[in-house]
Length: 106
Image (tube, rainbow, N blue to C red; front, top):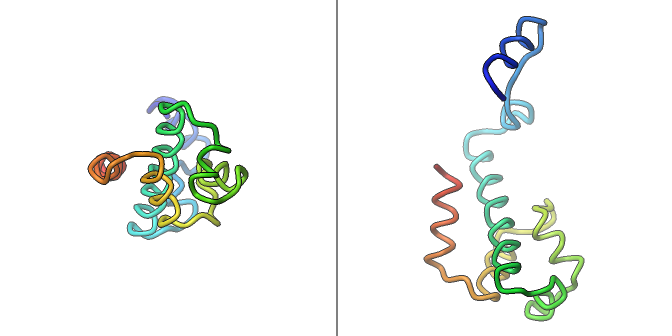
């Protein structure tokens, strides 16, 4: 949000913050959410780059297409270990995953 809009909202009594403030997340919880979302995006981008469908990724994982869709959307029911397993299954390297996580932390 640009600073002029933020100032306008605050002058009218609105409180401007981010998801961490709104959800009252600790710094660690917010970092965890960011890492999970980064892995979800990594999975989606790698799948598209490799021209794989969600169904093909599901077959690699012995899962369902709907589960892959949930993984890519960052659904809370999806664990980080499942996201990591999926990203590795479609051919990303641990080095690439560390790069994605480091970018999320920056």
